[in-house]
Image (cartoon, rainbow, N blue to C red; front, side):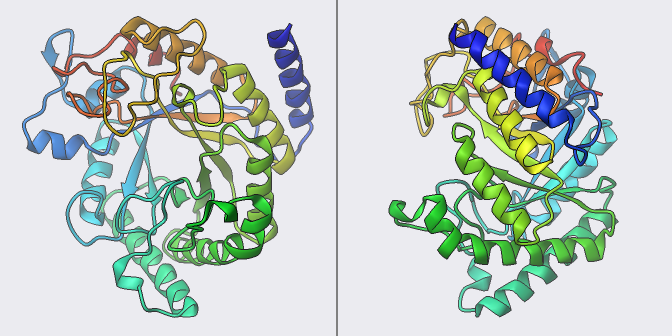
Length: 364
């Protein structure tokens, strides 16, 4: 009865969405990856294998249906996730026929739902000076990437910016309700995002933009965030969401329930949705930062075959959902005995797991 209700609710939301004229016509699902550790791993001697044969990672992914590539970009001048590293990623992805898009973190290190650090180079600036620095950096870095082969026009400003961006972040959890965020953190965040978008458009007048948050379990929060940003003049062409069902964060949200949230959000703001990050584990034998992400989705055991079936069914669901534009699997390449061991789409020896079979046929 519960699943029937969810499906009926999703259908009703989809019908509402279909009548929203600002949502583009449905296109075939684009399946992409975020595989930004690849160049570092290559330098350390890693190799990726399908059926025992070593294969160029980018070409191998493209041959199995991957069509898009999410490129991580920090404000650092050198090393992983710098503009130079991102340019090499873009060149490799494009050469394999993938469509890369940059994620402009506006940070010099990891930034996500749990943190949004201010780059060291911008500390001490007034807010007006920081906005100017953000705009100039965004213009400069996009011009650099386009001079080195970036051809697409999609850009994500920030990564999981639920609570803020670029130093605008509430350390006190009491300040993380939509009401508190509207008052204290989202207004300045919106100004910084608009500054970044202005800089991007100077380098690429055809630019389209995505904002990406991680409250995949909370429709009220998602709607509040995107309504606020659009109301403040932030350009939002796509609404990005993370979705990690085995994490247990916010409860175990099954695929149908996630689909209801997506339908409601897209209908409310008139924008298509991108699943900017997703993954599902293939074993319970892993430790580290994500060691608690072992909540099995009903019917999908944490085994290589369970991972394959979950991914196949999730992609099939997304392909049939009228509001979902694309899905990006996070770090399929990051194999080994580390904290992402279970979620990678290669086993610890670099051999492809069965889940690659789930991707074939879904990319446009």
